[in-house]
Amino acid sequence: MNIMGGFLYKILILCLGGVILLTFSGFSLDQELDEKVQSFLESHRFGWRDMNVPEIDGRILYNIILENNYTQALEIGTSTGHSAIWIAWALSKTGGKLVTIEIDERRYKEALNNFEQAGLSEYIDAQLADAHELVPELEGPFDFVFIDADKGWYTNYAKAVIPKMKSGGCIAGHNVYQPSRSRWARQTGTSEFYEFMLEQEEFETSILEESQAGVSVSYKKK
Ligand SMILES: C[S@@+](CC[C@H](N)C(=O)[O-])C[C@H]1O[C@@H](n2cnc3c(N)ncnc32)[C@H](O)[C@@H]1O
Image 1: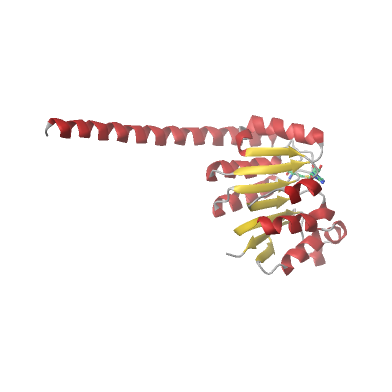
Image 2: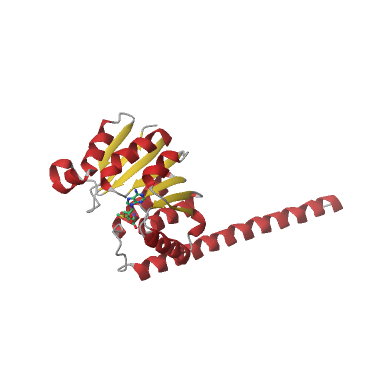
């Protein structure tokens, strides 16, 4: 090997070493975050008292985001942040970000504290606002929307976000049941929302069997 060849060879080895180092340090950072979120969720498992989603629904949202590689998420109804933590954890893996809206200041502040403790603040833009006003103003686009605020307003939220949904995106609703099976859902308005989503021809809507608390999903056709 001549001098030039030896020089290029050394550069190549150095570059390769750099790539390996970056790959492994990225890997260990991901692992660190996973451990931090898991330990936060574990220590708070029985401490969610503010109308928060059950753990299984958090996992459902997490899986939907990962399976579809969603990156632009909106949550309406943060409360103290349980569902937002599952959503943002998934987004930390897809390179995405969550905008989440809460009207109650005490819950909003507690959510901020929870996001910090879980190590997920950088993936969450938490807004203290009335979603009735803020949602229509948001520019989007979104590929994942989770509606979990005032039930009587679900249809209005859907009307505001539908034009901002990306193709293949998903609008999920919480506490949504088959209207024939729940008087509560008919009275609160989530049935009206479900029926409205069924009428939207560019969406495929269903209710997920695995959730006891009623999770509807409406996927925008590609
Ligand atoms: C069912 S809880 C959300 C639970 C949350 N997704 C979780 O799992 O932790 C509903 C929240 O929506 C909030 N909310 C109700 N009406 C709202 C509005 N107009 N704008 C913003 N937030 C609202 C309530 O204050 C409440 O904290």
